[in-house]
Image (tube, rainbow, N blue to C red; front, side, top):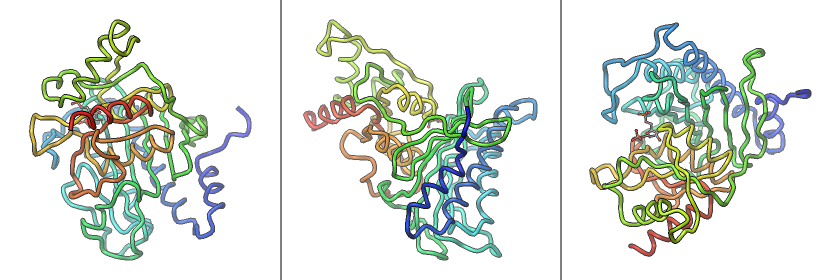
Length: 335
Ligand code: AFP
């Protein structure tokens, strides 16, 4: 490929069009990129560098932490806390918000991240990823948790890096979605998937079927109709995929369409879904909507939810427009 456009060049050129852009955002994004390259290297080296396996601890979600959950969280924090671009951070792996150490300047952005999404896949050598979300805040403040609790519609940037056969970064700043592949030879992310669009029609769904008995009637109805195939009301056969890594499932939907559901779950009323709004649902909803898809809890648009806690969970239904709208209409019929 000639005339390779690097991620840095792409962002600088995109920011040039914005009258009040100071370059800070470009620098912040570069720091995130550096952290993700380090994570990509470690994930790729795996047990050669002894990073696989359990850390023997639990995170705030009560989930067993992998060694790499902790290592990747440290990489993200250490790549971002000194830069002067951030007022604070929040991580899926850390109970409280993360403050900027004394001695470093504070900036006008907040960074939220899931440093290693899908980490239960790491020991079986399947795709994992890093998800991040950037919010603006008042410059120089010492943020409180409430400063992070903003609707997903307020995000200035969201992205994820998929550590798969290739390492890819998918990014939106609210002007469409672009995909970049890490060229390991030169250590740069190169624009390879410009203007990604999710097809409106699909015949593929992704859901963890083992939870079927806990779903609400609208989701039962939708999946039941898909499973009936050509002989049923949908009059077509559906295919199913479930990687159990949101990054991989969303990437598939961005490239060939599909619908992903981690729906409202009657297992535990204190946990209305599995996915975390700040680190998973909001950034993915921003990306999916920017690519022409739809993202809902079934009852409301994800990006319109006012979060109440930094580790809050929400039901997530996202992907191809016509299919998600159908599932939302089943919720409207039922409730
Ligand atoms: P882990 O990071 O604990 O593996 O969780 C991944 C995840 O949050 C998301 O990436 C998957 O879509 C979902 O959980 C898979 O959940 P199940 O294991 O319940 O299928």
